[in-house]
Image (cartoon, rainbow, N blue to C red; front, side, top):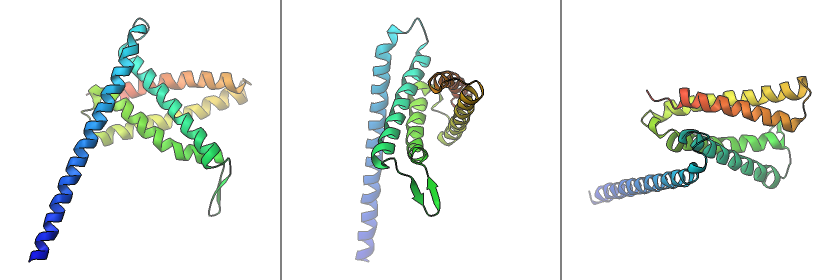
Length: 188
């Protein structure tokens, strides 16, 4: 009988600790969100004649997340994988694809949270699972658009890769912003 009470009390202590830890992490996440919004909005007055606040937040968050993704990709490709082919059983994955597969989930999650809580906070009442599925579908279409536009501009039109990448980025960013605003983070 005594042993049963000890087990129950350990479970209660563990549950309370988990609850406190969860609240603490949630509070930290909201402090970080508020700080990000404060920093972005600090620079907004210089751009308020060019674009509205939401578009500016989208540009700032999307640009920052893109730089974050490129940084992680570069570190993974050059220093973790050492530009070596990754072998998984009989499957050989080129280093740049392996680096992409490693970094994509990280930048996907950070981009999702930036879009949900910083750019489109009015949509945060919608269920996370529904929004994340919609966001993933938009990101997947953006990957396909990137691939398609690059193939079109470089291989069909004969453009150099850098201008092709710039034009591709322009079109994909426009598509991404409007599809996220009207589809993934739409307020009902």
